[in-house]
Image 1 (spheres, rainbow, N blue to C red):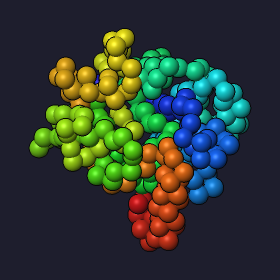
Image 2: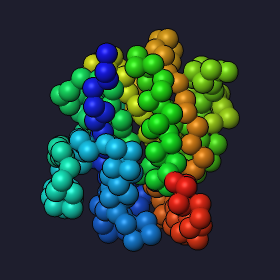
Image 3: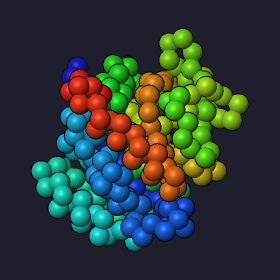
Length: 243
């Protein structure tokens, strides 16, 4: 049976408090890396991966961001949810609960990575069985509070948390239809807690390694992402190969 067309989701409802404390005045999705808003970089990564139907959640202070996004990408099948949620997990649930069967590709707005790396993650993740959920994992640790992951020889995630390693989760997920339909327990407050719970419950979670992802939460993260973007633009022969 042919798998349904893959739909995308972007979690962009965070407040960006650390960026604002550092002097950034734009809403977090509109903070620019190398001149491009974070939200635009993520959307363009989805487009590069062949995804043209997207659900995006922003908080209630970001109505203008939702309008900008719709105007910027008029050819996309785009649904914007404007809702302030109490946690990353509740934002995740809002996105993956969107109508439509099959798996869903989800990214946080602050998971900045080169388009070629993102596309290769999607291609590898889609080769996994449809009943599995696949997480992007990276050895490139650029996060204050990373969620460490351990995998077995087949790539199945066997542990998530402070005692796991040597990879960290990278804010990008290919979510199975089964996990999309789950109702997380009330006690689970954060997305990382839900993912850790899934592993503990025996849900099949697999990891695909992506070399470079930067979790853009602080001013230094913006600088790091811009430095990485500069190295990519200086490698035209590599860029032509999709890197």
